[in-house]
Length: 461
Image (cartoon, rainbow, N blue to C red; front, side, top):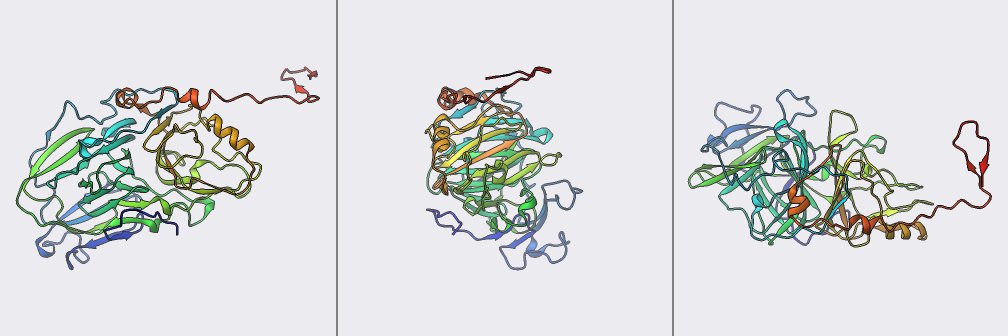
């Protein structure tokens, strides 16, 4: 069965479908019929619109939802800066190092002292959230659940969360989502949520998309199915708390800085909702992999789960790509990914197992690598040696493994934390991976060299 066998059992109900118009009510009759904002919504609720795109965005891009809640989200105190001297996840506010070196990180440490909000460490990024351009790449490692009286949101972009360790129990305004390793979760810009850790410390990766939203890639000649199928994405059903007294804190990540406001009612009071703007999750085990059944290794774009396109067709500000278990059957083919220099930046992580193009042990679960624009990369020496000489028969690779890549057309800068403070950069990455490669070039006896000079008819042996 093409699903992940999870150790933690699912506990919530969902609605299925990517980009589908969903509706959900936790109390029968809470959704108004026909109208979106009637004079008096059912049961004394307030109607509130949550806009993820401009009102006049083209219909196929437009993302809006209507929420029917006990009190509006606007009912809070003034936001004030919080932890301004220590909390800064803005690419422009961090010193970014744009370097051509290939980089690889040892596994990032778990941190049991912080909650979700304070676990976010900007490793790399490009662009500016104030201009809604670019992306940020984070590592998170948390050991504490958020307070039950707190909610968090990012005004900067959509969070694509790739969990590597532990379990996330995410309570959002629109309902609950349980996230386990080998599942991803996308929480759109502005959606308020809190994260509970039911099984202890968690760790993983985040791509925050400052511009646009993720969508399914076009399938072209593949046809109407395969890769990530729309029906396998899951959105929450409405679930609410009824608390109109007490002390609650709303935490906002706004241009990378933390702000806090107080209110006297729960932020999780949405009784019903309908629309196209909502959080969702996806089991990577359901990805239907495409590959060559004759010869050659296709471009890794065939493994794209989600994409965030630029205005230039076929070029993405962010692609989310995975390397799942799959069969390799190519004849007379070097089967690992080929050596490569790319106009795109490639940030890779490993959820579990061993990546088939890096089998030497340096690329480990919870670690990462970055091959920036035009930085040469490819299989390490050991992998090249084995793949060049192995008997070619149908082989399944990646069993028990899941590697992924955040790929971007932008030149990605690395933060001071990512390059130095975390102390995880492997100084010997190049020497270990590619310096050991040997030259095998040899002109057989009797084969002539062809001159590159105009008018030179001579050939040399």
